[in-house]
Image 1 (spheres, helix red, strand yellow):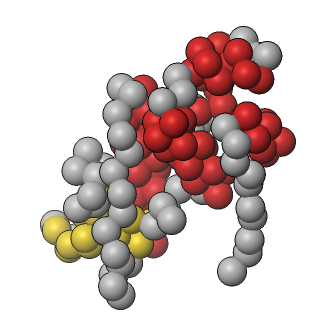
Image 2 (image 1 turned 180 degrees about the horizontal axis):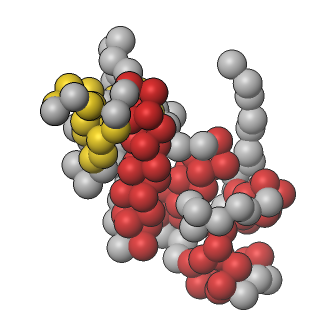
Length: 137
């Protein structure tokens, strides 16, 4: 669901990656492998900014054979949780109240750089009337 197509271009002996759907995410690297690793970090950083600014997250365009980059599985779960909160009009304070948590715990829950326990994601999803499904493909 969070697989964003990228545009790879060779420049000055290295590679540059941009995201058509997330213009804030741009990075460069020496080779294709390195630049795609950096691209994941750039994507995660840009999406974190959307969350911090309480903006709707961009939707990935269809990949149609393009190279894609996605956040880690845990971060994808956090992005989905944030999206559900936005759709339902549930603010962080309300989620904290439903979970009987401190607001700082909800902040960490939505922080893409924080290693949240998956159980906490499940609890939050449940409080929003949702459940988490995990699959390996």
